[in-house]
Each structure stands twice: as C-alpha cells, then as structure tokens.
Length: 127
Image 1: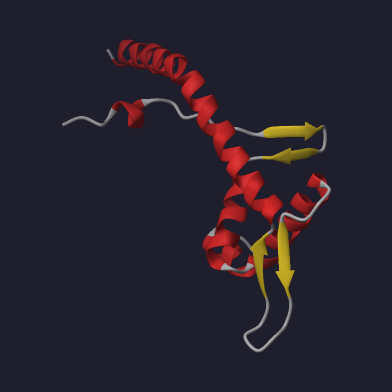
Image 2 (image 1 turned 180 degrees about the vertical axis):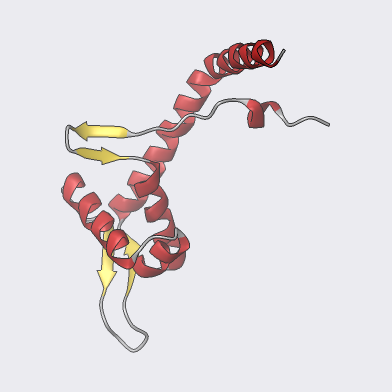
C-alpha cells in the first residue's frame, strides 16, 4: 500500500520571532523536551547530537530571551548536577506545541494542494 496522506504532505515548521534577535523554534523546544526527559542539559545535548557547550548556550539564550528561567539547573551533589524545566519552561513547551498543532490544522488544506501541484509538476518533468 502507498504512504499515508500525512507522509506525503509537505511539512510545516513553526518559528516564533519574539523580536528581531529573539526566536523560539523547533530546535529550542526539542532541547527543552529532552532536558525534561533526560534530567540534564548535557544528556539532552547528547541525545540531540549537540555539543555540551551548544546545549548550555541555547539554554542560556532561551532564559535570556524569555526574561525568566525555563530551565532550573541543579549543581553538584552526590550524583552530580542535573536540570529540569521550570513551570514556565513546561508552559513554554506546551504553548509552542499547541501553536504548532493549530498552525498545521489551519494549513492542512493548503499543504495538500501544494503537494498535488508539486506532484503534478514532477510527473510532467519526468515524462
């Protein structure tokens, strides 16, 4: 059987521009989700094939552009440090995913039309 309609549709990616220098997009949200899952910034970075420094820099950037902490760091201790999302960080992830779902639903018809138009052009070029 052929691929499902969802697999054939072009995809939509949402980036929220808070101002000219401040953006929240799929990569930062995925990092926050990984931090929530892994319990550590470095482990979240590894899960995303991202350097330790890059993961920490992105967390600092998220906290800076939001004006409050999305991630709370826990230092030292018997088992080393860790990190978890703050209530604001969890809310940020939930809100972003809700916006993303709404955008996909709103664009579904146009994405399907685009897929048909692109498919027709590709078939014409192949013949």
